[in-house]
Image 1 (tube, rainbow, N blue to C red):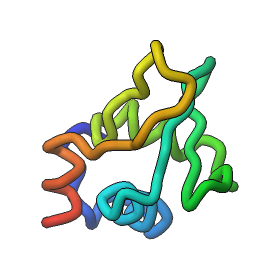
Image 2 (image 1 turned 180 degrees about the vertical axis):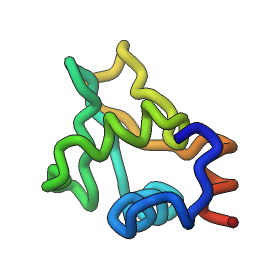
Image 3 (image 1 turned 30 degrees about the vertical axis):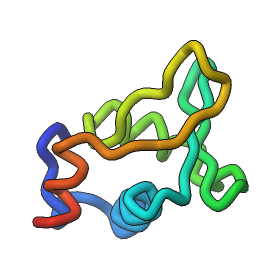
Length: 81
């Protein structure tokens, strides 16, 4: 999914990317990135891992237990396109 366009993303993934772009998400470290939206754990437990693996969201900083989620250039392009 690297370089994925919005049309190839599920509506859920598009919504999560918009929430990340709006600064509403945090990622926690662990065996899989834990995604929080508006302070609550995302019910799609695989969303954080999927978007990080696709190169759309930066991987969480392993030195921080919880930090802001940030779009990559590919994530910004996917939302724009």
